[in-house]
Length: 338
Image (cartoon, rainbow, N blue to C red):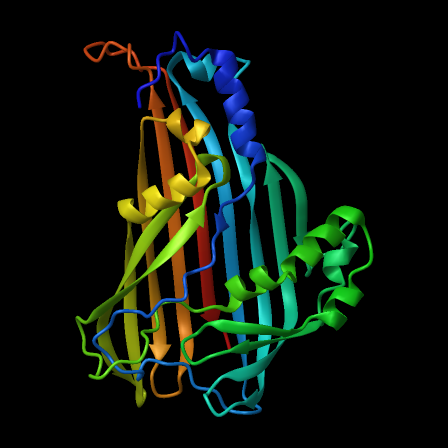
């Protein structure tokens, strides 16, 4: 939908900008509990051994920004910027027990933590557990604390077993305490430890080139919701030091039919309609040791952009047209480091 700048004043754009930046980071809806279409059997699964211990580093980032071009970039009433956070956690995972379905109860101990939080380009929180805690003592109190989860062979966190002691340790400072408690919310813990991309059981063995898919719904707050079909491909299985290493790559595309249903449920979205078009890039990669059933590396990253360009701009002119761009980025990276 093209929006006339005679109707949409710069003051309205400024209000839109402030609302978008205040909305926070991308929120992810729960994945629907539906079977994954695949041509493989569960040879690509996580395997657990009681007493087994491993150390991982997980980095999650979520940000959104607004930028202006043309004469809008020189208007002091229009202030863009970026709002978001970057969280880096190093943790030890110890397997405590395994049930008859192969699901494990794992004890997660937080070894190191970095938390960088920005609002409209202003740093509001910058914590590094390797440095003096200062005003973020509550985050420092998380170091050495543990919580327990249940994770199944397909990489899904099926249950948060216990966070009592870790939550009880967080006491100091209102802002830092709020951030620390947020790290221990059930949905946040599930997102931190869930591994996407492992195919569900089927009849035939998985071979290089086989693919499977599933749908993920993502809520962009004021920009509305989108649905993506995440298509996974087994690129190769190689041998390294006696281990079989599977490499799975993911690329996702928006699914218009599901997205239309989401918009019907939410109603017309004012902010989304202000923008003329959008571009999405959503990709990922998983390296799985099939011999031990352990994840070596895993990442998924989504970048979504919305554009609004002055429809009255002279396309034949060398002058840069007035335009506004909204960008949302969400990424998740996990790596075994011991």
